[in-house]
Length: 144
Image 1: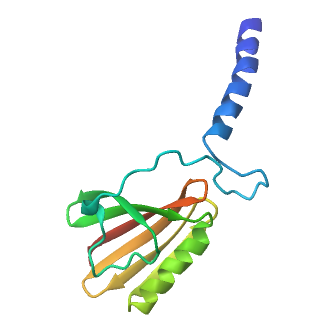
Image 2: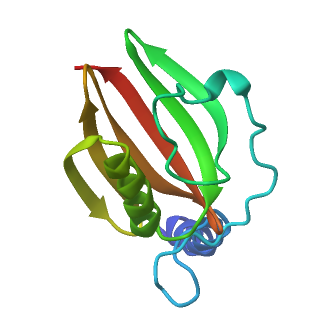
Image 3: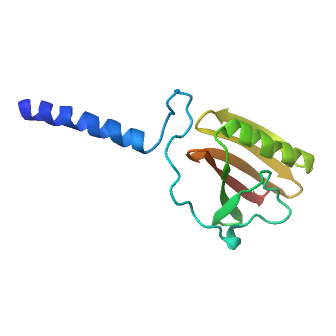
């Protein structure tokens, strides 16, 4: 019994240190990601959005494309630390481009997203923290 208590006592500081090192709430407790970015993924030209779909955020680096049937998911990262603010800026650009916004939600600081439709295309945009001062943006594009 003593050994198990000792192991638990030793494990708690290690787990707490790991949680802090991997990110999480900032020093003010506002929920911003605090882990440094280190080396981010390189841009991949094959992961760029189709020309008719707006990125909605300047300076985004597209680094990954996933395909499942006719649905494609494009991944990018951009400067920012407020997922709702970045989502709202992207959503505004979609509205200006004539996209119908079908719904949106947010659970700050973890994620914010919206769904869109235009013509025979539909999709969504999700913004999540990636690392300190950087958000990950996932664009899902499919056929309606």
